[in-house]
Image 1 (cartoon, helix red, strand yellow):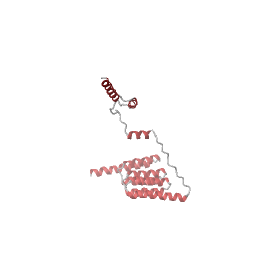
Image 2 (cartoon, helix red, strand yellow):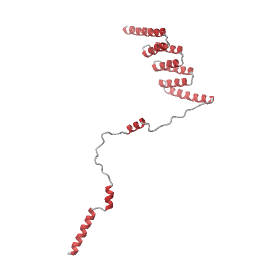
Image 3 (cartoon, one colour):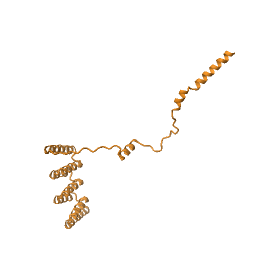
Length: 205
């Protein structure tokens, strides 16, 4: 009987040990954190928003490119030739892309070479004479360098080719007013009224 009781006690002890893990395992299990709320957050932040916030706060500061200072005339001529080749290649790929023409002309203007800048604008007009920004940039370049007669010539040509483009008339009149040329401003306004009258007559016919 005693042997049976001792065997039963050993069996019960083994069962209790199996059900109750040792202290080391208890410690390891207690370190695991449980998530109480598994529902998604009300406000979801995307990767795009994080990049936008980083750009807004300027977290990554990129240093500006170093400025080139050329003192050798031969080196300057080489750099100018290389730059012109780049512009010509871009134009050759797509002649109707007017931004390439304007960038080219603006660069020639920055090199203090108005004759080349004029040549680029004239070529752009030959490529697309109905492009309003090209005419405006061309005339504004002449006005910046106080080449008033050249600017008048461009405005006269633009309003003759595109008389319905109101921007040309406004800018032409404004230039004459800035020069205190009241008679010239009135003349431009009269030309505009004349063109508008001819347009109405043609529509009625």
